[in-house]
Structures are given as C-alpha cells and as structure tokens.
Length: 316
Length: 260
Picture 1 (cartoon, rainbow over the protein chains, first blue to last red):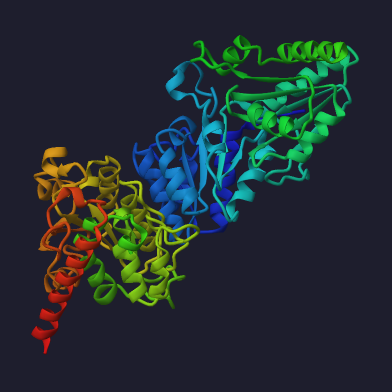
Picture 2 (cartoon, each protein chain N blue to C red):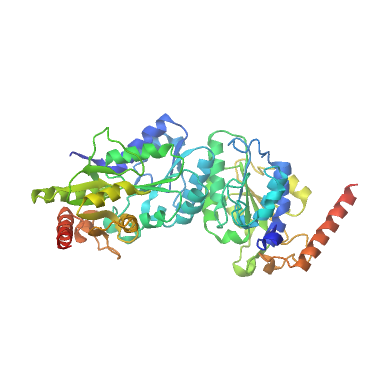
C-alpha cells in the first residue's frame, strides 16, 4: 500500500476535472474554499464557484435552487455545520423536494481534532440515516473519493459525502468496482469480520495484519455507503464469521454500528458483535490520531476487541 | 377545500390569493406545457401554509382538474396541507418557514449564469421574516445583483399568536429591506390593478432584487375573518361557511355588475 493524499485534496482535484468538462458543474461554498481545497478551482473556473459567505442554511437552500435551474451542484461546507445547522434545509429543500444536490462534508468526524467538539461531526450518519432519500458515503481512500464524486455527478437523488484531511493509504486497485450501496471486501478470512467505513478502514486492515500474525484470519469490508447499507454483504459476513466488529469515526449511537445491528438482529443473525467508535461524550482534546488512540480506535485496540469476541464465541 | 377537509389555513390564503391570481394570470408565463423547462418564469411559495390559494390558482391555470381539490389533506392525496412537487405546477416543497427565499435566490442565480431572461417570484409571509435565513438569502440576492428576483411579502400584520408587531416587531420593514439591498415598492396587495401595475414594472431598479411589500388583509373578503388572528388555521362552522360564501357571492356579483 502506498500513501496517497488527503481525501479532501482528491476532492479538490476531482471536482475541478469534472467541472472543466461540464460548465453546469458548480461548487457552492460558505467561506470554505480554502478548507475545501477549492482555491485552485476558484482561480481556474471563477464562474463555476458560488460563494455565499458564512451562512450554511443559505448554502443548502441556494444549492437546491441552483439544481432546480439545471445545475450539478456540490455544496461544500465543514461536515459539522453542514449536517447540523443546515439539517432542515437538507431534509426539506434537498431530500423532500428531491433536488439531487451533492452535499460535501469537509473535515468530517474528528478531522479538526483539537479545535474541539463544535468542529466535530460525530452525529452526521445518525441524523442523515433518519432522513429519507439521501445516500450517505464515507470514502476510505483516494480511489473511493474519486469514484463517489464521479458517481454522484449524475446520480438522480441527493448524496452526502464526508471527507477527511489527513493523507490516506491507497487501498484499491485503480480498476476496482465502486457502486453506491455495494460494500467492497478488501480481505477475506473465516474468523472475524471488520465492517469499517471512511478513515477507519485502514485501521481495520492494520488490525487484520496483526491478527494474521497470531493465526486469526479476518474479512475486512469497506462499507463506504452507510445508507443504503449493503445488507447482503453484512449478512453474509455475519454468517461466515465467528465475530463481527464495526468501526467508524462517529458516535457509537446511531451510525454504522447501529445500522448493522438493526439489520443483523431483525434478520435473526446472532454473532458476537461490537460497535467501535467515539463513545457518547464530548471527546478529549487532541488531534484525530490522539483521539483515535484515546478511544482505542487503533490496530491494537481493534485486534484486542476481536480476540475478546472470539473468546465469547468459543464459550458459546 | 378547507371546510371539506376540516383543516387548513383559511385567513392567510385569503390575504394572498389576489397576489397569486395576478402572478399566474397576468405576470408569469407558466403553463402546464412549459412547466418542465428551466427557461420560463418560476414561482416558489415560501409561506407554504397558504397552500389552498396556490392549489386553487394552479387548478384554474389548468395544471389539474378542480375536482382534485376535493381530496385536499385526505388519506393518500398528493394535495398535502403544504406544497409538494407531487402536485402538478408546484416547484418546490415548502411549509417550514424561512426556506423559500434561499431556493429562489439559487434559481435566479442559476438562470442569470445561463443568461436566461426569465424571472423568479417568491411569496413570503410577514411572520416568517423572523427566520434569520431570510436575511442570509437577502444578502446573497443583493450581492449577486439578482434583478431577475422579485420577493413579495404578504404583509397582513398578523401571525398565529397575534399582531406581528407584538409577537416580534418587524418595523421599520421598508428600511430593513432597503438596507439589505432591495429596490422596494409598497402596494395594496388586495388591489388587482395596483398589483398588476407594480409587478409589470419589475425589476424596479436594474441591478437590484425587487421587493414588493404587499399590504393585505388577513382573511380578506369575509367580514368576520378579516384581521382576526384566531382564523390563522380555524375551520369555519357550517353557519360561518354559509355566511362566508354568501359574502363572497355578493362581492362577485358586485364585481360582475361593475364590469357590465
């Protein structure tokens, strides 16, 4: 695996390439072109960037109106504000009205680290999962970012894509298949499955490496689309494995783990199961890496959880 | 519609129906035939609760049969108590207040980018001006010099709790709109010739969004509903319904007499 760039940098380059080919592609920003890696876009295509100032509710309403005028709109704002302050605009003006706006949540999860909980989005999966008619995506690497943006361009319904700001390892071959709602199995093994999303997928892979040294073989799934969930891939994994661990940069309430639990329990599939994410609290102060370490969202922490769940499975 | 469904927003629909009548029958060129095109005039109703006025005008404009209105708010009907795009002729789903203006600004901006000559009209209630998002959108409209946008405010002075000036004072409203960059005109919003004259004159000033402050009477046309806050979404009793229709019939007869 080689180290790529931040998914946000990949976004800036991809959306510029898409917009150069299609003058109907617009980006709308709320004083966020710098943090959205859109400064080169603004210089290259000044007519295709719309600034609304620090006004996130307005950002989303305007994005809906521009879409009604036939534009292909990427509405770009920090995930923490976009999915909280503008939530009613997302619900009514985008999803209920069915304007296929592409909502880009930048510096998602705890990417903003020590800026604190005002700047964290640990609620976005949970609130958006409860809103009808939106696809929720957390790319794990540059390939998934590029593929998700390209798929969103002409997708006939709203899409939310959350992106982080630290460089990501490339997990896929360039010709890998990407489709909303279709999980990607990165590694296979019969013992434990990690179902991870976004920037935690690499951590799950590293945990699988550690476990392999102990003879424990893992399946690792990149569940890039949190909604709609790939239920078939999840159920197959739960049936094939002795234990299942979900991993996300999100509250343990209502996110990927909650979505998986809903599916598994109602399908009658019972397997030792653990949701790894940020506990129900305002996080300790630190960088994304320090926060992950504090809450054991690390290769060691995930491996330890897997071993504990295997012990539960063996005792059954 | 409201009587049959036993629900609805009676007074606000009566204050704004003259505005809608003028927009759809004199000002905008929106028809069922061109509705799917971007290149036409557009209307977003931010005060979604006056949906009965909109549904009635759209039926008159030929978007659907008036018989559909009998299903208003009934089980399974698309004619919901606030506008949705499932109803032919409705452009955007509204009902939560303070949303329509941003969407209208986006539409107007997109059309300007494409060099289209068409206009965007939006109708706001006065009570909803307390929503801060309206002022965010107003700044954007002025910043981008959207003179293809006309914002009409149904200034009936009432909201559900009482007088707007007692609930949350709006005045001096004209000064506020001017300070936010609008070219402002005031009219009697229940006077058809005044509305026609004003709306035929948009943009009021090239390079500026237009704001038409339409002074209206909530419950206009029915003596015992006019200016009574409790009629916001009060449904008339059988006797009130009979009286209201009789007053409206008399007014219609008087109008027909005047034109004969």
